[in-house]
Image (cartoon, rainbow, N blue to C red):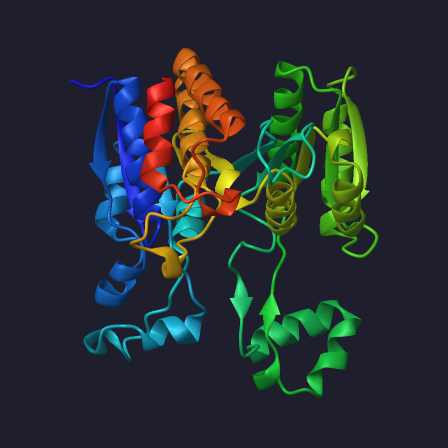
Length: 372
């Protein structure tokens, strides 16, 4: 019997190709694992009306963790048009399967390292090493939205907030409402995880990023909670920034930042910006970590226009495997894998199109395997 059971979720488009590349590396490492396929993605939305089938959810309840490729995701109306004709008119509504996974399994901590490897021609600077902690289940991505705005929802808001009256003349049928719901518990958990990481790896500061001067209640809650948590870590500084200024400062002085923590949407924005500083999404790995399950994924999408060409950079997926190995406690394997990736980037002999080369996803993975 294998030591680990790992859910295998290729998803859509190039997710399948980078997962194939990662399997080359995993096989070379000889990780003692059984890989259990899970159906997820656009194909299952179109044919079954559910991008995350119940059978996949049941499978994920039996594994130690999961590797996830990428998904195609489209707005509600476009998604409805692509349903099998037999499923249309049944009130089915598309919901992102990865967002649903995060909420269903309470994968509360999204961890996104953005590290520049020397020799990468796409690096903004070579001394960037930022880890972003993004709250993964609350905030703007909580999924509580309305369009059109129901009368009873408007009435409650109008009763409790005088500013609602300015919107009434537009007509409730013309109003869309998205919520930003944050809890003190959620803020405390993600900030604590960021400080624990900083403590473990000897980082000097944790930056909490929000917009409390405008989003006074939700942003204020995040900042106040971060200040409380910081008292437990007297050797680590707490820096506070606004999201707009933080984006500017990441471009100006990226090496100043080691650990950044933010709510869901702001964390998403900051992690993509930081990814570009180290070469783009082809180098951006991530982990969705809960108390009972972790799902590891590159941060790029399914890139349908490249599907079938084995063109995209698999390094993000391979570094995602490295994160999984760390989480499983396979520290030696994780270190060997990162060293191999760093070596092939430094040598520059094998490069995908984004780095100015012409090698395939699988050729990059094979080169990493040779280094191992």
